Length: 502
Ligand code: NAD
Image (tube, helix red, strand yellow):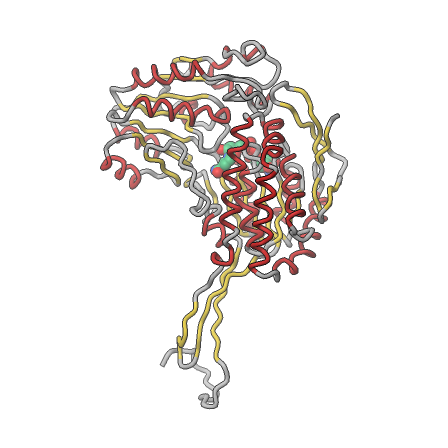
């Protein structure tokens, strides 16, 4: 039976407007259901419910909020297989990978359970004669999160656990490509005891996003997606007076110095390049091989790529699944011929990869493209610099550390990067000189833990705060400083001068 994915407003599924869009099973290419696409009126209904629910939640004690978060964490953990299956069926990633994203998202929930500690302010006794000062952080009100297709559970969980723990009401606008996870999470919030209306979901596209960006009752917007939309969301949201953090695209480079352990590098490059079919904002898409290791390294990478098992996400033998949609697969595949026309060598052609239970990727129904390796990719070419967001690993040969660093720092993006070396001095220099927000040293996917903050530099992030960790707590709260004096018999009378400390 074909499923229908609706909004979630005021604690119930809500059908809303007349527009719908198809949802696909990427492994077969078949339509598996439809998603309701919000009108501006649907967004208004979700915001109104959030506005009405917010004061009760704002006034809930920190301990009460923390208890709801603990219950949500336990319920999510209990339903992790169900959630992973929903993700895998719509996104295409293999079940173990979907479980991994749920686990990483839950770490943010676990971090947010510590909200009583995270919201502690400062107190200074006696800042002036019998005057005390203290700082508090207060929630903003109704805030929204707009998320991409590639992590339908984890990326929303970068946002809403902290927003809700801080005492806000949260409206999620998930990707229309894989919307089912959002509804399961909404049900689990309700079961955990979160008051209806505090967590809402509106499904949809630009119509929903634009209404959230201009709605006067939405105080802040967190966005994760591609760079052009991130820039648009940041500019439009801030023009409407909102606080915005908008995380964009990426093109993550791995710089391999000649002293590195090439087996570790090859394992890492293949894992980070092809996990989740390369549809990760922290995927490694370019390996910068410093002379003279290029030939040896490519040989080791190809040996590993040849052994990867490509198949449906629900087949436990599969290591890599299909891409999310047909148009996205076609766009990614177009970079193979482009790369060759730009002068690269196609070492492994993912169109020919055998799919479990099928034929070559290009001939199997569904949105298939196997792992692809392009060697001798010219520095500065489109394949080198543009975000492809699929299973295409480019090898760019460089003559030195400086040559590699210059290429990384010359990029539009600055999300993640990694250096592989056994030289501590070189690694330390790299961490200091590289213009990227998240750096790995012999770690290919340096996604910060929940208690640090996640975010890139340059066109990978618009705004001042990264997500989760203490920056997340700051984003979803406003600071206030209170200066207090209690009645005292000896006061000095009227004084029109500016208060100073005598
Ligand atoms: P996308 O930009 O197409 O969509 C992201 C969200 O924006 C979705 O909810 C979508 O409905 C909405 N949207 C799409 N077009 C819009 C428009 N014209 N106006 C308003 N809203 C619009 O991104 P995607 O394809 O879902 O996700 C992949 C992208 O996300 C990649 O570029 C990837 O690098 C990026 N990403 C970045 C991070 C990060 O942390 N920096 C993390 C994950 C994904």
